[in-house]
Structures are given as structure tokens and as C-alpha cells.
Image (cartoon, rainbow, N blue to C red; front, side, top):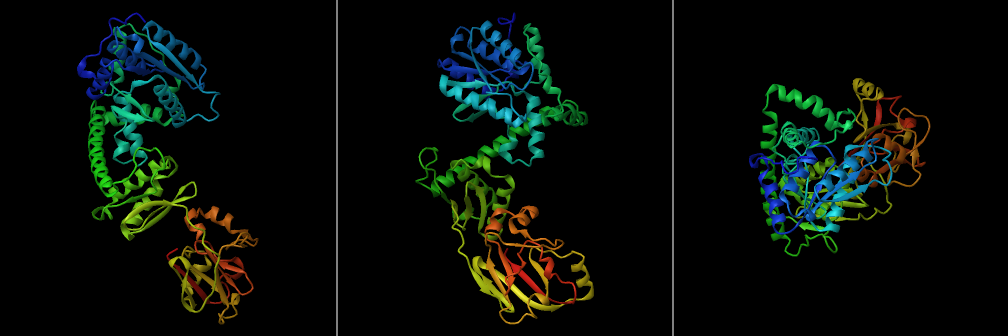
Length: 479
């Protein structure tokens, strides 16, 4: 590294808020970390941090994490260690205990961030500088769009962000890879090239090599600028919405403990004017899950279903992991362990039958048209809410011939198309029935105890509509 004294980034190229945060922390005598892989971006970020701390090099800490996933990983660590010494900074090395069995972008990123956050706390770092550039912004924007992210996700990577108490600053966000390499070359600085950056195994690499250039070809030189602007606009909107939400939720929950210490709250009161607002309810659900360390364990589709049900029906309930359910009752978003439903059994009558849990089962003897009968035989019926059973199952639907009851361990029957009995659990898995529906599932049986149907599953092969167009129609509502 021969260009230490010659290194300089024009002020206009730096991201103002990130640069200012690092410079102010350094001026106060704070310790600054620089996350450095050895690549051009992180080397540039490190050298910029060193220029900010010139004369105070003892406050600069170079953080490198060896994932042990590449043959060159050890030589990369040695390179970064040598660079740190040439700058008069302390080298802080972390490493995976063993080579990862399965390599993924997300897994490697989580390992790095956990290391950086732990060292930030251990060393008392005021900020950790990272080398994200404008290309990273464009790639992230496309990746988040592919995943259906909201405003918060689309505002990444932010100039400043927090993770487990550590502050991350990204002063190079406005710079392109070409500008970064030009500045390094002018300073006669060296860097390492990671061969995995060209591997098609990682989505980001494919976007960088194929998709982003294709988009850029449609608007030469403009996509990176547009991505930077969009990221900033998403951040503005997301931050504004979060401020409004924070103010309103705090006013509605004056005793709410938001620090994350102690016992997290299990309920959030929702202001009446926002009880049917999807954006507010989504943030309330996310806040409650985050406070209870459940945010990363809940799928985005689960949140979508929760919000949709809450807005359309004024109530919602979904499973969120660790044996908990999140509910909305019109005024509260909360978490609770559901009480197991007690076993029950009801003798069915013709017509409407009220069942536990607010469900209704209609039992009717009907005569099907030829076309409808043939469509059922051909498997065209939607078994999720309605089933057709041969009259032989009940002896002509005599009084008390059918029973509905709760699920029991070991329940099994041969579903349509199968001669051998299968456990309900196996059929649920095959049909991908959600866990919340499995818990409240019930079965319809004849007096001999044969299972004829369970809503959401196919009817029994033994009692399918086959011989006569006069059949029993079972219709379940609110399943």
C-alpha cells in the first residue's frame, strides 16, 4: 500500500449523512471500525476511514471475517491484516468455526453481521464503515422488488443503519464501482478480486452480470442514478410512516415498553381511527413480532393474510411460531398460546348444524344433474368446503346416521383415489393445509365410526358418490 498519503475522495462523491456521522464520531474521539473483505469497495471505505482518523490511527479497527468457504479465504485475511498494519490500525480477525456445509448469500451475510455487531460492543465502536456502492443499491432494489418488499425493504442499503446496537455507515453509496477503482488506482492502492463474484450460484451475481446491464441498456447511465433516487424516496416515506406510527401507537399504549428489555408486551392497543388501516395494522403486527423476537420466524405471506383478514373482517388469527398465535379482535393486536379445543362430538341432523368454533355444517340429501354427477366422478369438485357422499354410507340418511367430531390421534381413512387408509396428518401435509386449520379440523363419520370426510380434504374412497345421482351433500362454512 504505497498511496496512503495520496488517497482522497472528492467530497461531492460521498454520501453526506454517512460521512458526517463518521467524521463527527471521530472528532469526539470515538473508535471507528471498518469492515474490510479485501475487495475494492471495502478497501476504499477503509482508506477513507483512515484519512478521517489521520493522526488518530489507534482509534481505527479493521474488521475482517473469514467465512472459510473459498480456497483464497486465508490469503484474503492475510492481505487485509497487512493493509491494517500499513495504516497503523488494529486488525480484528473473526472466522467461522468450520467451512459451511451449505453456502448461501444470506447465511454468509448473517455470519459477518453477527461478528461485526459483537466486536462493536466489545471494542466500543461508534460506527462501522462499509463499502456499499451505487451498484449495490441498484442490485438490492431489483432483489427486493423480486421478493415483494415494502417501503422499508426497498430503502436498503441505507446510508446509516443499526444492527444489534451497532451503527453501520456507508459513505460510498453514491459512488460507482468504476469511480472507486479509479480513486484506488490513482493512490496506487491494491485490492483483491473475489472469484465468487462471477459465480452464477448467487442471485446477486446473476443480477449484476445479466439483469442490471440489460436494464441499464434501456436507459444508458441512468439506472444507477434512478435506483439511488428511488432508494432515498422509499426511505423518506418509510421513515415518515414510522414516525407517525410510533407517535400514535405510543399514545394508545402509554405504558408500552419499547426498549426490548424485560418482558416484552404481548398486546398493542390500536387507535380506533386506524383499526381498519392496512398500513397501520401491518406495522403494529411487525412491531409486536419484533419486540417478541419473532420477526424473522414469520413468513411475509402470513403477515399478508393477517392484514387482509383484519381489514376485511375486523378480526384475524395466524400462527407465528413457538406455539403462539397472533390475533386481532378489532381493537388489539396480540400474541397468545391457543388453548387446545376440548374433544367434542355432535349427532348431525338434516339441514344446518352449528359446530364449535363458529362453524356450520349443512347436511342435505340431493339429486344431482347428470352433468354435475359426472363432474364429481371426474374429480372436479372443490373438496375444501363441500363433499358428496354415497347414500350407502348412512343407510339413506336416517336420523342420527351421521356424526361430526373433533380430530383424534390416529384418525385415518382412504382418501379419494386411494384404497389404503392414510393418517389425517399425512393427508394434511400432502395438501399443505395450514397449521391453524389443522388444529380446528374435524371429521364427519357414520355410526360405525368410518370417516367420510374432513373439510379441506377429499372424501373417503369407500363412500364416494358413484352408483346413484341421489347423494348426501355436506357443506362446511367458515373453515
